[in-house]
Length: 114
Image 1 (cartoon, one colour):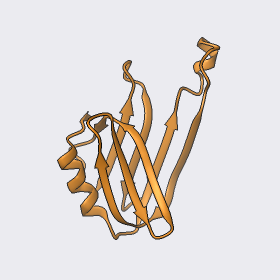
Image 2: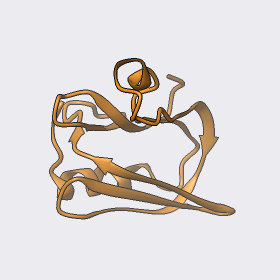
Image 3: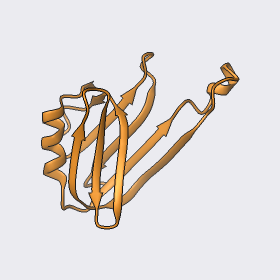
Image 4: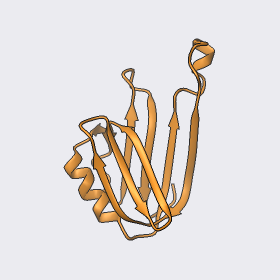
């Protein structure tokens, strides 16, 4: 994965709008972090292969970045994104990594299931 280049990601977001897409969204503060440090509050969420269609999407920020996708009946919003897979042409793969390189958040869009 490469560091996010916002203009390129925005182009990919625009190229996928108004299509039936599969979404993968996850976030974790380290579900097992409390085992190593009891002061850490573990939290996580995960959704995969849900179908969405968005009419507008945008990336914002100076890094870490945030992405919002406006759907007919709501929004998907992801914050803390740092990296993307630049070589993917049919999917958008975004991730946020902490200072140690551990995955904190991801947002992935694809025409095919994950």
